[in-house]
Length: 352
Image (cartoon, rainbow, N blue to C red; front, side, top):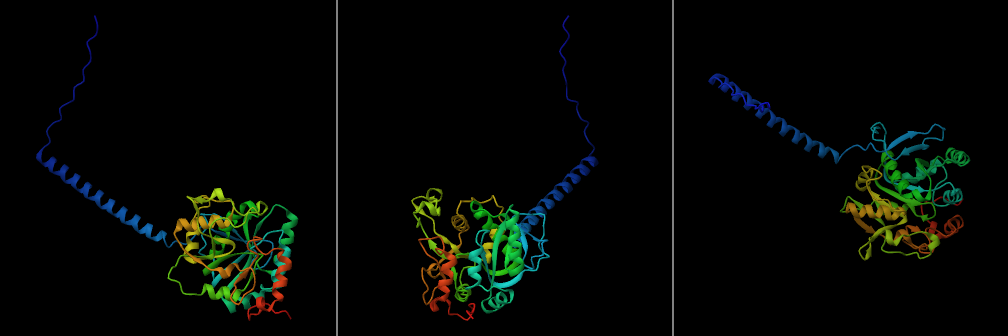
């Protein structure tokens, strides 16, 4: 005989007494009010936290003193280290910091620079800073070639005018080096402007200082010799990748790579970036230009930053568009410095 199906019935609950009902309602009311208060508190706390983010102390730059005894500027700044706090680093106050990007094969360029517009000794650098408000340092990464690193240590020990970045020095990684430079520069210098310069241009520090000191209505400024579209057509220069950064039918506006400046408010935004948060192009000037477009900064175009010859108002000279900087820079830097129209300035290195 088949077994009877099983049925399950809900048990009827006993009716609570009036006193228990009152206690139950009161308890629920208290719990509800407490939950509401906690929710409002959490919301307000989150709002205050978001506000603090806009004025945060950057922790994405790690500054480590090098152990090779290269001097006060033999330091290494890594790209990202959120576990490090840089509050104990005393930032040097200047009006502008100029990072001269250089490489392991550019020893001759550095020698020519130190014989022309850039002082070759610590006292000269200090005097130039006092006269212009600008601090100058060579910016270089690292290499696995121990002989090259040994030569670099000797040069740093002799001149004490470097900042060493903890990033591989390689042409294909220039955008990463540029970002690491701005992060390290911000950690070390409290500056109104941060300037990226190449080691193959002739520069007038006194005139650059006057340009940076101008009053501006915008706190977020991207200052440079601006361009749209390709200028160089020689494939050997490998300067542009037109298909990589076309926006519609027009190239976006960005500064020539040999010399441009970012105001402190712009660099603060760069410091907050993770390296992979924005797209990297193979050209660092295009990379920075695309980020400036995304940040909606004010573009300030100044053609005195890219003159092809010394004029009465030039700030920088380089051989546009024949070369990405000066053609044969080791020789050209010395030739330009012999011209009175180029070097006559109270802040220039004396020829005596």
